[in-house]
Amino acid sequence: MTKTKGKYLTGVYPGSFDPVTKGHLHLIRRASRMVDRLIVGVAPSRRKGPLFTLQERLSMLRLDLKNLPEKGCEIEVQAFDGLLVEFAREVKATCIFRGLRAVSDFEYEFQMTGMNAKLDPAIETVFLMAADKWQFVSASFVKEISSLGGSVEEFVTPQVAEKLKKKYGKGKKKA
Ligand code: PNS
Image 1 (cartoon, rainbow, N blue to C red):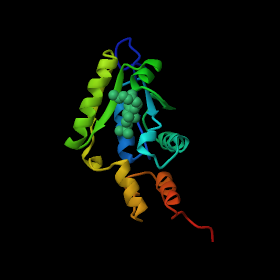
Image 2 (image 1 turned 90 degrees about the vertical axis):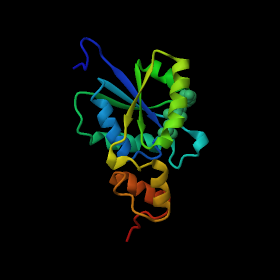
Image 3 (image 1 turned 180 degrees about the vertical axis):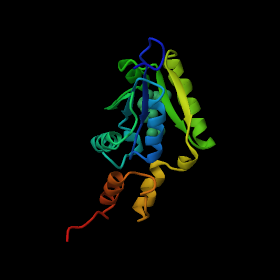
């Protein structure tokens, strides 16, 4: 199945996914309707000092994506270490998807898109506005809420909520 006449389109949705939120999953569903193959690229993001290891982030994403109802698009989760445009070229992607929430996202995204366009003008960045429901959801807030004992079930899937609890030492204890 192709989304455009005779062209098989691949897109990349990159991020740290520390951890994956329902906002990310919604964006993946929407992006997957626009391409034939979507690669969810997970960056190590060492400078951000992630809570979850790269392996944990990949596993959480893969598990959540198993339950995604979208059909007609091959969705893969891959780690990448290096330049995003190089990764996009490697997987033969023609576009990079990014989500935009508040205006505050814009400055950083604007600069990153500009730099990526300079590095490889053939790769287009496509922005999808976050849906109302997920406007304020970010992995950082989810971590903060969870670390302070708050409930994050509304923002992440149950398996991710459980892993957050464990990280913060509030996991289910055996009787
Ligand atoms: O979810 P995030 O943390 O906002 O994702 C940021 C990410 C991983 C997309 C960005 O840091 C990135 O592209 N990293 C790869 C390195 C790179 O290409 N840097 C140059 C960007 S101009």
